[in-house]
Length: 208
Image (cartoon, rainbow, N blue to C red):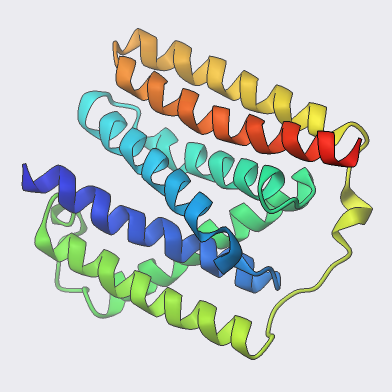
């Protein structure tokens, strides 16, 4: 019983830390979207846990997480979809790099294969998340980061493109999960996609 709770708790802390890092890096005010990011973090970690436990497709979890972050930035934060993808990839990869550095320095005596489902692995997640939260605060507080004119990379019919991408990703994920007989993951993807579509359509109506 403790393992799923521990996984969700520390993985959600990681996802939120990565979100605040990616927004701080590009001078975006991530705190304004904390509740939406928390919801999506829970969604992505539920599907990550089920993929890890029930299938041999755990390698796709980071890809799905990057896609969910991209959709979050595009539909909620209102960043053009291309920049959303760039920001998501940069944030996730930098978080991973920081954790890798910790792994080969502070945790160098620990066999990496023993980190999964262990208190040591949870400790690594907690330390990494704490450091990344501090780094994100520093970047935002002292206005250190990249500034770009996001609108220059905004595509024509971007709302439609984002909506189509969401539906396509949902359909592909549903097919994979149906083949693995994991109906709950399909439900989680539906919830996530519904949220993104809501924000995309709401913004389109506002601009119309």
